[in-house]
Amino acid sequence: MNAAAPSPATPHAGGLVIDVRGLNKRFGDKHVVNDVSLQVRAGEIFGFLGPNGSGKTTCIRLMCGLLTPDGGSGTCLGYDILRDSARIKREVGYMTQRFSYWEDLTIRENLDFVARMYGLPDRRQAVDSALEDLGLATRSSQLAGALSGGWKQRMALAACLLHRPRLLLLDEPTAGVDPTARRDFWETLHQLASQGISVLVSTHYMDEAERCHKLAYLSYGRLLAQGTAEEIIAGEGLATWSVRGADLTALARELREAPGVAQTVAFGAALHVSGSDAALLERTLREAAAGRPLALEPVATSLEDVFIHMMRRSDDNYGSPA
Ligand SMILES: Nc1ncnc2c1ncn2[C@@H]1O[C@H](COP(=O)(O)OP(=O)(O)O)[C@@H](O)[C@H]1O
Ligand SMILES: [Mg+2]
Image (tube, rainbow, N blue to C red; front, top):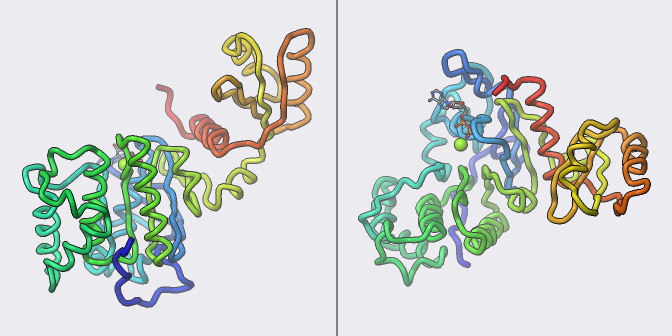
C-alpha cells in the first residue's frame, strides 16, 4: 500500500502524540471519566478496551478537543487539549462510532465531500490516492449505502486519512464487521503505523486487543490498567489452570465457591480457572480432581482472563447492583 505520508511534524514532548493527565468528565451526577491519564507514543497502535458505557467514546472526545473536561489537562499532537481544540480537531483523523457518511452518495462522492470540508488544495488527487491506498479504486462508483460493513469501514478510514493526519482516533471501527474484513482492516492499521501514523482504537474484540502495541482498560470511567499485553497480564498477578473433563458447567459452579478460585471462564472444550493465590488454587483443583476424570494443566493467563477479572473487581468496587 502507498498510504498517505504524515503531515509535517509539530513539536510534541517525548514522542508522545497523546499525553493527558487527570481527565475528569461528569454528565449530571454521572462521573463518566474518572481521573484518566494516558500516554500514546508516535507510531504506536494503542488499544482502548472496556465494556459498553465505560467511557471510551467520552475519553476519545476529551482527548481530541470535542468535549471540554471538568478537570485535567494534556496535549494531543503537541497541542493543548483545552486551548487548541480547533487545531487538534483539524489535524487528527477521527472515525466516530456510528457510520456517518452519506448512504446515497458513491464512495468517491463521499470522499470528495470530505475533502471539500477540509478545504484540501488538490482534491481530485487526494481522493484518488485515498481510493488507491485503501483498495477502493474499483468500487469508487458504488453507493455507500449498498456496501457491506467491512467496505463501509474502509471508506470511513479513507475519509479520515484524506487530510493526512498523524494520529487516528478510531472508535470501534470494526463493530459488526465480519472476521475476514476485520483482519484486512488490521493489516491496514499496521501498515499505517509502520509509516509513523499513530492509532488509538477502541474495540471489544479480544483478538484485536492482542494486535495492539499497547492497551488500556477502562471500567466505570476509571483506567484500570495501561501497558503492553504482557505488562497488563503480569500486573494482574493471576495463576490460571486449564481443566478438561465431563460436565464442566457443574464443575465451574462448584469451583467458583471454592477457596483460591477468583473466576472460571469457558474456553472451548476447557475451563480456565484463575486465582491470585497460586498454591491455594492448585490445592483446590487437585482436591476437585481427586477421584474424577479431570485433566488439569497450568496455562498462561490470557488477556481475556485478565480483562474478565478486572471487570469483576471493578463491579465489586464501583458497580451498582443491576
Ligand atoms: N452527552 C452525554 N450526556 C449524558 N450522558 C452521556 C453523554 N455521553 C455519554 N454519556 C454517558 O456516559 C457513559 C459513558 O459513555 P461512553 O463514553 O459512550 O462509553 P463507551 O464508549 O465506553 O460505551 C454512559 O453511561 C453514557 O450513557
Ligand atoms: Mg463508545
